Image (cartoon, rainbow, N blue to C red; front, side, top):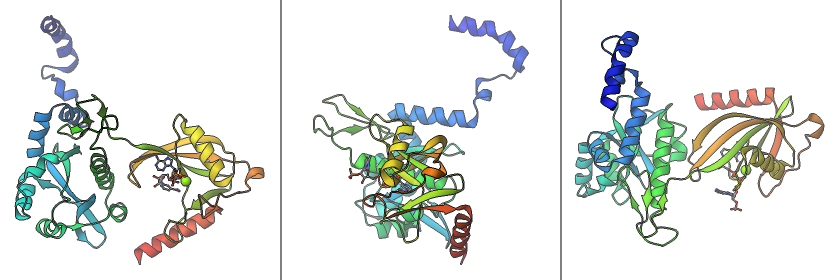
Length: 317
Ligand SMILES: NC(=O)C1=CN([C@@H]2O[C@H](COP(=O)(O)OP(=O)(O)OC[C@H]3O[C@@H](n4cnc5c(N)ncnc54)[C@H](OP(=O)(O)O)[C@@H]3O)[C@@H](O)[C@H]2O)C=CC1
Ligand SMILES: [Mg+2]
């Protein structure tokens, strides 16, 4: 039936697209990659085979292995299956650890990408064999180029999620992961667990002339940031944002406009939703909750520009 309807469509296809019509011509590289990744999540054998032909990024106890090409530029090291096998052998492991690799993506060159935590092995020996260095993600996040920081952050977040979700919350039994590492399942309760992110709002509040920034006592000296907070269960983005600003600085905001989003790996996996919002100048008096924030202040555009220029000058020197 399908066959005959496909044949019936052929003249139309030829008219529209010419003799060399093929379905794949209309699948962009992006679509093919997304479908490929999805297939690897669903098919353990396909995923294992992709691992043998893919690229693997190593971590040691959640710290990524990076290569430093010059003092300012770091890149994650993409190793092949046989390269990792050889490094593991040199470090006294039989290589079975490789099966614990977790799928994190697919490069534009169509190589499936995986990450692997070699936490039981000697990090110095691994780093030396790979000509790399293990660097804390909080530092690495700001030194990695473009798309590489989110990839490394995603890898670390997935590795961490697997490490803390080894047991079923209902039965206490060990959970089993699929080959891609996109889920864990408990055979006793049949519960399937998926990697989780906590939704977080971050908001730049303005009174029309100034913007509001705050700092926690744990922030590095001199660092101020837009206000942020975790969404509570059942809240909308707008409700969470209004509550957080009210809690932290005692203001009521309006005119909430969504701006953008990003995955944020610290302290665990958050999904940050960034917005703009306003308060009227007549209601901009701050009442800071010092249990949550060490300080919060209104900053003028000139102050922000000056601080950014000073920061850029400090980084350049
Ligand atoms: N300006 C900022 O604060 C910035 C924050 N971020 C990120 O935004 C997120 C929120 O930061 P923050 O301002 O500290 O959040 P909050 O203002 O919500 O305060 C943190 C407190 O919220 C409680 N909490 C509620 N839900 C969670 C959860 N799912 N995970 C952890 N704690 C929770 C905890 O309190 P208790 O332990 O008392 O229950 C925690 O100490 C973090 O991922 C942070 O890294 C990023 C950039 C800037
Ligand atoms: Mg906060």
